[in-house]
Image (cartoon, rainbow, N blue to C red; front, side, top):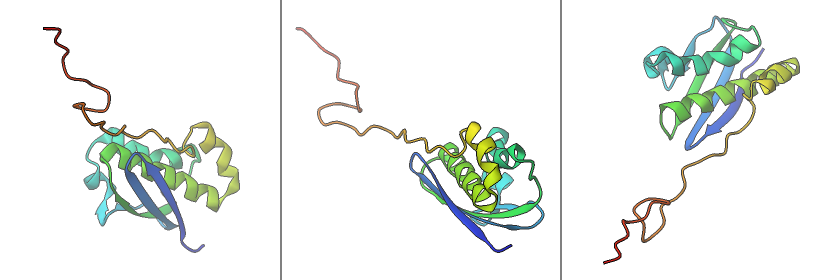
Length: 128
């Protein structure tokens, strides 16, 4: 098996994942994923696609991710991992799709409008 690559996006984060046969090492931007994402609930985002298809500790991952915050980055990585697993084996598609790992969540922050302090918030109204 050669290297399989896939891309995932969430909010402002973009993740590129390279999947190879190995023993389950996940490296994110040159660091171990447990060092890069210290929160355990965020670490679970990275391992969920493997748990869904019962493929833990079979593949090594090399991840490049940039933009956004830690939650957006972890969900972008999760989507990229799911896409790479589907490229590897088409039978993985239905369990991953049922968990919504293959769906692009397009919600992003609304832009700030002029004459307002934020996107929708307005300054306090004063009648007199």
